Each structure stands twice: as structure tokens, then as C-alpha cells.
Image (cartoon, rainbow, N blue to C red; front, side):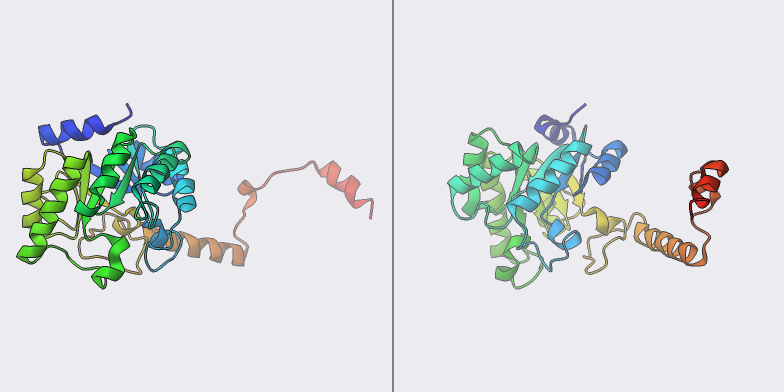
Amino acid sequence: MKKTTAFFREAKKSGEKITMLTAYDYSTARLEDEAGVDSILVGDSLGNVILGYENTLKVTMEDMIHHSAAVARGAENALVVTDMPFMSYQTSVYDAVVNAGRLVKEGSADAVKLEGGVKFAPHIRAIVGASIPVVAHIGMTPQSVNVFGGFKVQGKSEEAARQIIADAKAVEEAGAFAVVLECVPADLAAYISEILTIPTIGIGAGAGCDGQVLVYQDMLGMYSDFVPKFVKRFANVGEAMKTGFKEYIDEVKNGAFPAKEHTYAISGGVMDAIREDK
């Protein structure tokens, strides 16, 4: 059965941990959905792991719509949350609502995610007012990488911690049904999870959150350009892929592939007739 925002609310109440993974294409979404993941995030992290950018800032609305629609076709049960890319909502509340609507209408997203706390509460409120569910994202927000001066843990000082708490309360009050906490000290994330009525989804924020999200290429060892401290490798799929690629190359080079069982037959008489035409 298709999971909805109601599942997130009930999971928070019951104490059931929420699972979320990224996906950017149909086949991966299908596999994650069949495995039973609760939610699939079509993250603007596709800028890094799919498109090869050094950060997420170059990702466009067209990129997100294209990948979101593909994922949605593969996710029968998981709730599909799609990221709003850089400058798709920062410019105005109006732009935020219009672009969120595009992700739902054209990208078949079940919900959208945007970065920012207190400052973007009006944007969240307006999107929710347009009947589009919103996941907020606070702490280390990758679209602000140039402001932060790199990918750094947020909320370590008292002032910074209080600001993240204020951000969390603001996005909840604005109507977000969940909030991602990225690169936030574990004790602070656990405290925020205690005081909010909406679930927290952690990434580099400790086990005290109500759920967890990871980039699937990270947890399967498929992306090695940068591996954050918070990543656990659950399978070494990247090495298995390279082994398969190398075996394919070797067998093509030495003539072992394709073998007879990989080919289609034709009548000898047909070929004899063709050869006679020479």
C-alpha cells in the first residue's frame, strides 16, 4: 500500500523508525521499493553522484522533474519526496509554490523538500497552503555550501544550536510534516526530535532521530569522490560492478563472449543461398 504523510505521523507516535534512501532512476527506485524502504528521496545530490558536479548548485528544475518522474514510476509503495533545487524557491514565495507544483504535476512527486529554517517558513507555509506536503531540511544545508565555507557540522556552539532549534520549531509551525537534520551533533538532534511533534530524519545526526536517510551510492560503495563520516557501507556494490565490467572487457577481448548460447541461429540452407550470391 502506498505510504503517505500519515505514515510519518503515525511512525512518530508509535516510535517506529522511518527509512529513507535516495534514488534517481526507475530501476533503483523499483529495487528500493521492493526492499521495503518507507520513502525515496529524489535528492539534488544527483548533481554529485549522477551528473558529476562538485556540489548541488548547478542542478535545475528540469533535472529534478526528469529524475523525479522516473523514480515515481518505480515506487509503488514508498513515499516519493523530491528536492527543490537551488534558486527554485529562494527568489520568492510565489516561485516556491509554482516550482513545488511543477515537481508534483510534472515530476509526480508525493512531497517536496526544501532547505532552510526560520527564513523559509513563509515559503513552506505557502506550499502547504497549496496542498503540497513539505519536508524541511535544516542544519548543514548543501545549497548553502558557499556561505558555510564547505561541508561542516552545524550547531556546535550554543548560539548555533539555539538557531537550529529555532529553525526546527519554525518549519514545524509552518506546516512541514517532517524535517531532515543534516550534520547536527547527535545530542542536539535527539533533543530536537524530543521537542517536535513531526518526525526528524537524520543524516549525520545520530540515532536519536525518528528516521534516517542516506545517498544510496554512498551506502553501497558506488561513489568514492567524497565519503562523509556518517556513511556506513552496507554492501560493496561498487567493487562488484567493477569486477563485472572487467570480466566483460576481458571476455570480449579474448572472444569468450558472446558464446553460442548468447546468439541466435539461422538455417544453414539460408546462409548457403546467401553465400552463393557472391
